View 1 (cartoon, rainbow, N blue to C red):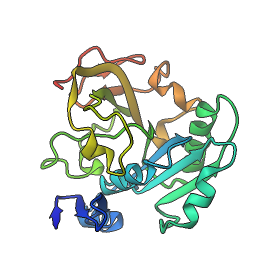
View 2 (tube, one colour):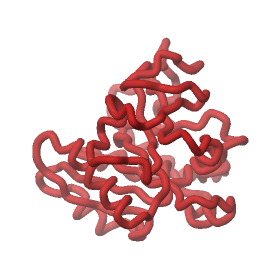
View 3 (cartoon, rainbow, N blue to C red):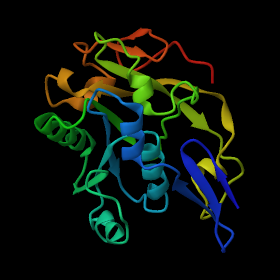
Length: 239
């Protein structure tokens, strides 16, 4: 049986495992909503994440991100063979082999540099592949661009607090979406640390990772309109 939501179709396969599919193509969503900007891109690093990465990509494309840039930090280029069996278009996914120690900051910088040079996207998000961006009011903001379109023009970046999910008694791997396996939040789930999306034309240098920490030239706010400074947001949203 299939159960449709605004973004996903969840289908039970013959093996009894749930499969998560897009119920609407990202390009169709962007054109249907009529957003005037060049959309949003996601920059992320990955290593040892092949069991979960399809769901993470599908989730954020369905949320309205136009393109995901994945920097593969594995020595053997895990995503090389993985991508041969996928049908993502070049406009949806770009994979860069980026091995070595302490490469997260350099990967973010390289990703931002590409987007700025090509002027391909108005917003850039910097996330990890174990982080899912959750829009609580999905009826009001069905896609990420519906949310970003409400950000005042003098605000350079939008930050989101971490929220921690309880282990839900999951002690071993099962081939089901993590968004179905891990549903319960931890007690005091909200964390003062943040992840950030930034307007691509407001970045002045390549130290993009530090937009979470010390880039005070960026005017940042949270989704409640509070102005932020530094790497944390002490005004924890209701969790």
